[in-house]
Length: 210
Image (cartoon, rainbow, N blue to C red; front, side):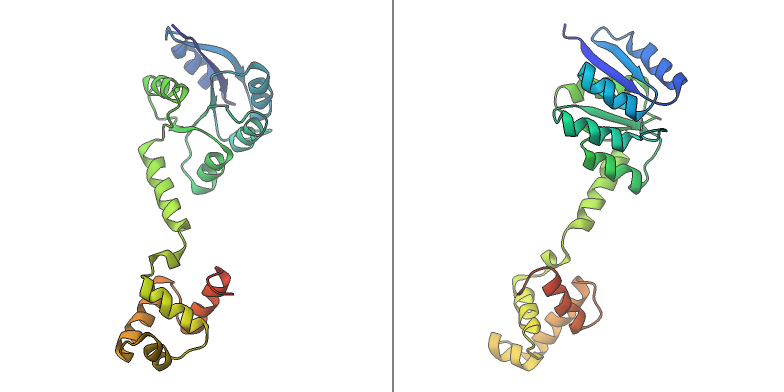
C-alpha cells in the first residue's frame, strides 16, 4: 500500500494535533511534518517534498496564499489542499490563483479531509460546493461583455466605432433603421454602458478596433 506523505501547515496547535491524530489512524496516510506558519511551511514543503500539503489560509508571518505561491514557484508539481474557515473573495481567489489544487472548509469532517487527500494525490481537484459556485461566478464575471453580442450586433458596434450614425449603418448593412435602433439598444445593455460614446470607448479599450 502506497503511503501518502502529508505536511500540515496551520497556526493553531490544537488543529494540527487533531488532524494529525485522525490521519494517523488511516493506514495509507502518514503525517511527516507540521508547521506553525506559512514561512516555515514553505521551507519544510520544499525540503520534505510531501505528496500533499494541508495549508491553513490565515496565519502570522506568512499566510497560506503567499506560502502556496512560494512553494509552487519552486516546485510546480506540489499538491496543496487549502483548509480554511474563509470563503471571502479576497482570500479565496488569490490562493487558487497561486496554485492550490483543492479547497476545503474547516467545517469539513475529518473523513472528508482524508478523502480529499487521497483524491488530490490521485490528481483530482476537490472544491467545496460553495467554493466551486463562487469560482464559477467569478469566471462568468471575467468573461468579456462583448462575447455576449451576436454577430450582427458586433457589426453594428464596429460601425458605431467608425463614427457612423444609425441611418448610415442601416444603409451599409441593408437593414431597417428600426432594426439598427434595436441592435444599438441591445449593445448598450449587454456592454452595460449608458450611451453610444461609452460603447465606442469600450471597443477601443478591448481592442475590437484599432
